[in-house]
Amino acid sequence: MKHFLNTQDWSRAELDALLDEAAAFKASKFGQQMAGKSIALVFFNPSLRTRTSFEIGARQLGGHAVVLAPGKDAWPIEFELGTVMDGEAEEHIAEVARVLSRYVDLIGVRAFPKFVDWSVDRQDRVLMGFAKYATVPVINLETITHPCQELAHALALRERFGKDLRGRKYVLTWTYHPKALNTAVANSALTIATRLGMDVTLLCPNQQYLLDERYMDWARQNVAESGGSLTVSHDIDAAYRDADVVYAKSWGALPFFGNWEAEKPLRDQYKHFIVDERKMALTRDGGKGLFSHCLPLRRNVKATDGVMDSPNCIAIDEAENRLHVQKAVMARLLRG
Image (cartoon, rainbow, N blue to C red; front, side):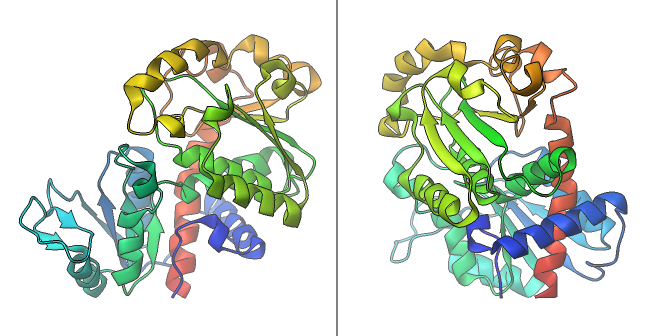
């Protein structure tokens, strides 16, 4: 039985096959790959694109999705073994995952970090708890990585540049946000861009905004295997210059994890990392570089109206592709 927890767990050939299948679903969106099948979508955190695309995707393939929000319309869940459950949690993941596995054919899980202790959050205990006890495939709907977003992003790049993305300059840029956010999409963007052999620049304000060493190591490993390169830069203009793709995301500085009030004065110094027309004009062919973001995006905080409304912005294409890649993942996992 295979789960879809991280793209790093899948071979390059498997990922290419998923993207090919997603492109086929985009061309012809209905099928019967999930006829008589169902998926439980377990949301510990809010969702717009993920929930909508999985629910509709399952239906378009002849299946059914049930959405659960533990602590709201489902019982709160405990994930630690050996815990005396005399607190809020009403049942343990050991029972939840196994019971759901008797009802459904797939389980999707969204669970953001608690933002208190990164040494705990980086263990991804909620997702790994489901993967440990479930007897059906588990899909990561975003925890500390976001592999479904990776595939949607990769498909959007393929649609503009073709299947071979080697040699393309890819800039993953930190952007300002008034709150410290999850590193999941940044971790995933770094992972998939290096996996596809692109020349990747991680642009961030300083060393404190580097990503967790696990994902930096994955990126280095991917470069060694797939070609391309990995560069860390704190120089905005140098990073943007001649870029084929600029991908923006805000995230919190890991050394301040759980101490965000102390980080706020630091991040407030870097509002100029906003993606604007001046920076995008530095990209390839006199400003023809593509821009994207996973969404939701705060306009004129992360990126300007002009950038978002440019014909070179592929954020909406990427968001649409969530529907198609989700179907490819579900169909592939159900085939076993």
